[in-house]
Image (cartoon, rainbow, N blue to C red):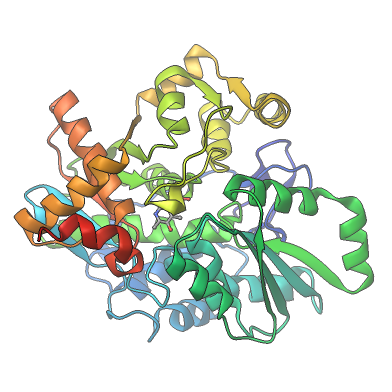
Length: 442
Ligand SMILES: *Cc1c(COP(=O)(O)O)cnc(C)c1O
């Protein structure tokens, strides 16, 4: 039986409890106590499998209190008919040794669908196990893509209600339209004055409010989260990194023992953390390249070990990465500090009181041995979209362009030409007003 512990204390729960609650009672995030490691045999079995079969196998390693039949039902429901490919996460080798993992073939055209088609199903099963009969009220803070993907995933799911908070002036026109036109009897959407960080801080404060929790309990309701603070968002993301590795081996681009790099356009640090988790399971990732836009708080942190959110906030053409408080970094800090919940609590307290904390040299070096941080400004984002289109006949969205540009910076600086798997996180058509001028040379 796998257990999950909070990053801030040793509060220990099962996977169903972690998913049903979303966030730990002490404000921490649930992480697996240890990671299941894939044997050579398991990998050999995974390689010829379909995406859904791989997902079922990998989920069963993490969600040990779910039955085989439950996982089967969740995975079939999530990945059958909702994606425009049979294989929901195809690879595109755009240049030699540079493969884009296209994660946006789902209903809302962003990678969030990969997890948010599955999460409501996992959550309903979890609630049945641990909070039977309760209505679950999902609160979501979004920088644009999570909101719609969560609404789409939870619309009319029995036993759930969902409220999404988005920055009124911080999302693209299409993202806003997608959210405010959502169908469903159990959905609500609210635009807030402020940015994503304000939305996320507000939602976390509601979760932590004893009075609110008591009020919900009186109505036989309980809160949960569909943001990547919920572990149930991360497991489906671990699946696509393991699956992509299997595909790279299957298509002869990698040998079984070859190391490769993973590049991720990063906001809340959930997607890149899922890749880190895949490595803990034995996927031979060498470096994680963490790509930011002008909101480069993570780039600075990865260089200096100082996390400082006291800085200007920019609205960019990659709005889903316009974030200054990357929640899931807390999980990485917990892992690299040897599970030191007291230390993590201390840093997070400093972050909430002064907006800043510094990790020890040892923790910084440990992170730097695996993570490279870089950022890409608006002009380079535009240029990268144009170049990929012209040279490689590949149309990418601004978030993916940020990743491609930072990967090029990395390769140039280090000379590291190992195969790069780049997470392509949104369809170019979702961000047409930014993409069109970048490819149109009239
Ligand atoms: C959410 C999102 C990101 C950032 O992912 P995180 O897991 O928050 O780091 C990047 N690109 C797109 C298109 C997104 O929707």
